[in-house]
Length: 152
Image 1: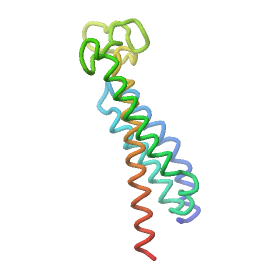
Image 2: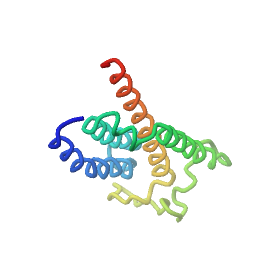
Image 3: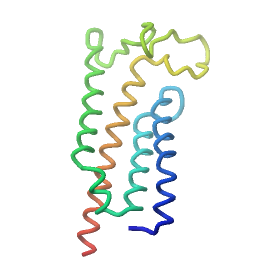
Image 4: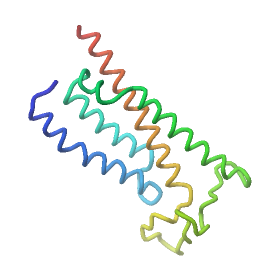
């Protein structure tokens, strides 16, 4: 466990890291970034808190089964979204230009930054973000557990 100063700074920075990670996930179809990058940013926030509080404390807060469940749910959502468009083709963007959520007509020229013009891409970005968050966080937890065993 780190000092009180490190824990206080980790508590302060963690919400901002989460917000930035979800921002990267949500804007992945119109800016550089996406589900993988945003999930990695959010997992970095988990790593920050894990290092600040130590393995024993973080193991009580975050269960590995919850993280692996998040990884599985993200993968399942991604695959289901890919299969829904199978009536036309695999990964068919069935929401694009449909008028439904994330399906407004795309304006001609440069996209001015509208989030609702990508069809299924935001759904897939969110699924990948959840999957990467779960996977990288599990890796961090296992590395901390192994480091604790080696240290003793």
